[in-house]
Amino acid sequence: MNIYFSGIGGVGIGPLAEIAYDAGYSVIGSDPNESLITKELRDRGIIISNLQDGTFLKSQHNEAPIDWFVYTSALPDNHPELSQARELGIRTAKRDELLDYIIGDKKLKLITIAGTHGKTTTTGMMVWTLQQLNIPVSYSIGTTVSFGPSGKFDPNSEYFVYECDEYDRNFLHFKPYLSVLTAIDYDHPDTYPSPQDYLDAFYQFAAQSNQVITWSDQHSELFSKLANTEIINQSAIRNNLALHGQHNRRNATLVQIALERLGINTETDTILANFPGTDRRFEKLADNLYTDYGHHPVEIAATLQLAREISDHVVLVYQPHQNIRQHEVRDQYTNQFELAEAIYWLPTYLSREDPNLPILSPAELTKKITNHDKVHIANFDDELWNVIQEARSASKLVLVTGAGQIDEWLRGRLSESN
Image (cartoon, rainbow, N blue to C red; front, side):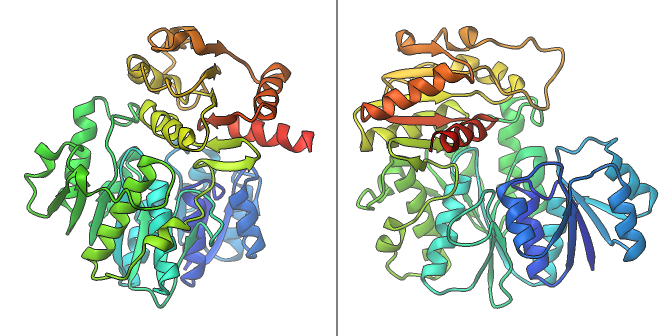
């Protein structure tokens, strides 16, 4: 089977391309941008074009007919490649339809990690632990990791571990063998019109799973109605685990409980204590400098708590993500920043926006923050970079967080200074 991936460098599509390649399918693709994932794929011999005007797709189809055209939810309906694929009569599908096909074709048991926060880290912990136990595992993680490719198919595996995303209702394509729900807070207003709509989707996802594990503080009054769901009390968090950050100990506890439910009862405390982490999840770039993907108030509070376990002096640099999301969370920005001694707030990264919504300014977004006197409005400029360098020189921990271009900017400036 010949599969073409449009947007192959993305965190969802890239790992799926690697899985398809490992599973024996022919893989090619396109992406206008270079990324860690496109490099990873090219290093494996996968051909990737930077052109997405449809000409590369057509030429490849003429050489060897393409069976599936797989694309990301972010691709507009009138995109040249998608239009070309339809014109050529190629089967088109979003990523989860193909993944569901591969899992079924290879007769794997699907273990999903879902939730608003903690999906990537928990998925990474699960994959890492199984690897260290020498248990074959196929998987997909929505970022790059140090202990393997972002996506992998192992022909000897019984399980497929999947970071299962709720955006665009992707996760509703699956009927998992076991689902682990990490945390649920309203997100993706461009997909879910209301908090209730968001919660209903998670309930539907849980209902179509064979087994579910979740926390008692995650809408347990709703999920307890499902006979397939195990509600874990907060007192079960294994705080003896040698991991920084309460949310990391919480996620690791879910991994251990999930493994126990799968009949894997081997001691894993030491394995999880040595978990190397995933890219952009409190990733250390240099002395006193960390980058993180967090862009929700709950995520920021959790990462600051982790940072304060390491340092008494934390400086936060934050770029909000999506103006449409900021209209939903603006009133939630309150006490989550109190563990930071200084906050540098950047303009919101704009993506998939509603043109009818006014752009909320940093001043509007920060007015309810309880330690408002610590907030500084910032921009991507030399002044901000000097602030970061001075804080590092003063032995303060600098946490740079957001899902937009902030990480790329940070890595670029760090590279220039070395």
